[in-house]
Image (cartoon, rainbow, N blue to C red; front, side, top):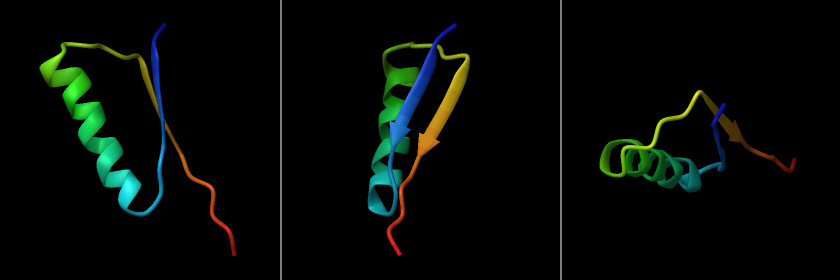
Length: 42
């Protein structure tokens, strides 16, 4: 089982989406799960 875990939040979330797209479409990587993490300080 392969998982792609990306941290993000704010503008980093858009960057993370581009990285995931590059890995899957351009490099042909396949993942069973996707996890996005975000920590927010109040």
